[in-house]
Length: 146
Length: 246
Picture: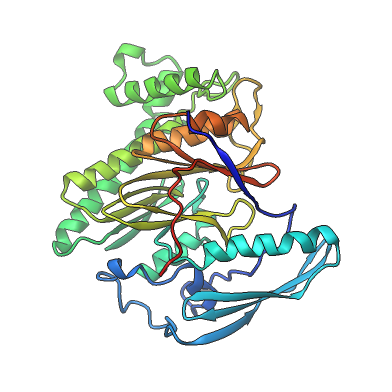
């Protein structure tokens, strides 16, 4: 029988989005969308390259400040640096003093940073409703590929 | 080629990367969505004239059922027995609801339609349940608490991944042993060769709660990534976590 191994701790309860994804399909493409719904992997660009005029060049650097979010532990605000379509750095502009929260934040950032900065082709998740789909990562990927 | 249509109340995204045959790809996609709409008409527990509802009301008897529904109900029974009753499509006081198996089974069948029509490189994503072919493809798994984040990324060449969780439809998965909503896990993803196996295993394990992680991990051909109620991540060593993108 295979063994399931515990590998990491995600975050404490109700904590902080590291950065805010703002769905903006049909209007402008935000850099945060670029980060999570980047152009397809090089091996898969044949059918959809050139479909997005808003893809930043890989050398461009952009700093985006997240929305300040009030949690029951205090106000949280993050700043994300993008290089091209990848997140290169995350820092906290505002951070609650609660010791448990400050201890947990780096873990959450580290894990989500690892996942966010990856290129992805699609997203698995619990069955999403057609209403919720509009604001989903998958919708952003579909919009980019269309 | 990309298409998104809404069937059975959820979005179905299809991407085919094979070269050439533009109109043939469209015909293939048409056939795929027609099949999913047919499944909805025949197997929806929310349509009074569906085969499922007619069977549930006693208007059809077991020998009169289509081979497809018989296959689905057999699968449901296998998972009920395998989970000690935690996964059960016949909960007391509720109508027969085989949706949890119908979804994975019908989307897997849809993917086989694509393969039979000659498609080699594709992604079929039905409301978060994914079948891929001709990868490597990179599949993000939605973070259980933040819709705008991923909690892991896996790399899959040919196969399926399904995720069960509470965040989209609330406490809709019931532990058949207690009759209560399953709340022991935040999210559980299963990678398997077919979506039939991945989706049913994910739902069944989620219904079992924390013990479902080990149960699913022990199933042949299944790799697991789970987040429990304390936000601990547990995964099988063979779960295909993607290496960092170049």
